[in-house]
Length: 405
Image 1 (cartoon, rainbow, N blue to C red):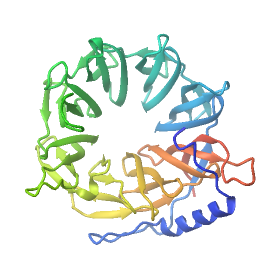
Image 2 (cartoon, rainbow, N blue to C red; image 1 turned 180 degrees about the vertical axis):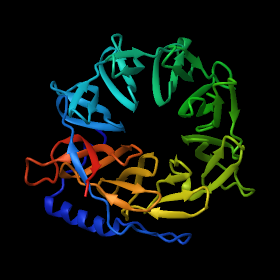
Image 3 (cartoon, rainbow, N blue to C red; image 1 turned 120 degrees about the vertical axis):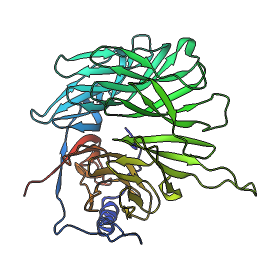
């Protein structure tokens, strides 16, 4: 599990660190706007979702009644994707495509998407139907593997190997028809393309590269599945990379051209409006893994993360301090991630600017990776330790829910 190798700390030290973070965790207002707070803080409860028989598990995404992730099996070596039903409290092993391992990436309604090994050891993207309990392989473009990234409506996007493993191309897969579309690359068959998100079942955001180009020499794009056209975002700089998509907005990073003196300027974040073609420069502060949800862009930084409202232009800071505040996911008004030192999981509301540290499932540390529009948060946190000299036990998939007053 991610960060499972955290060095154990004495319980007293961890408790002191937690109290310090709680004191700092209400967020810090930037010079651009005030930091309003609700009259009473939200209270989240942590639910240990258990495992598929092994000692560890991790949750990655949630949609309504379903939490998905991966868990170690009883043998202690293999991991399988799971779906946890919040209404029945049952964790279901989704199995594999004939291989030994699988992992979930996202869930929407009845469909879980993820990656699984096959009997010959290759890794293929899959869609799992929670109603029929059937796992379907998405295939490739003649190569040996594929990977899935996101789902919107009936469309799944990801990337797949081409014939002879010459390259990797972004794809769009229609769940209803079983049709897989190669989005290609402006660089031709040998060009590389990858998808990061899909909106309205129509627009795919991603990045295309030329294999012989310098490191990170790609360009961000949007592909229209109705017109079958790929359009460069033209955000400026020598190269760019799309990192997130929500509605009509794509965000990412771009590397400006070197100055006349030859100095390389810092990367900058950007936001692109699909409807108007308008590009917004988000500045260097928003260049580290920007994520967009609605009309708000968030980006990780040190010692705090930033949230920028694209409508008002107001920018706020949030985080635990003094280390980096990581951002792992966002949905609706909710942003989730982990703060360092720690890690300590958190949820941040972009409308109220409320930053809330989340309790672990018996231990101290954890990380939040996904949320739904209702405010439910999922991730991984430590269970109660069996060794009194350490603050944490094993790490389990965790669901954080708002406690009803």
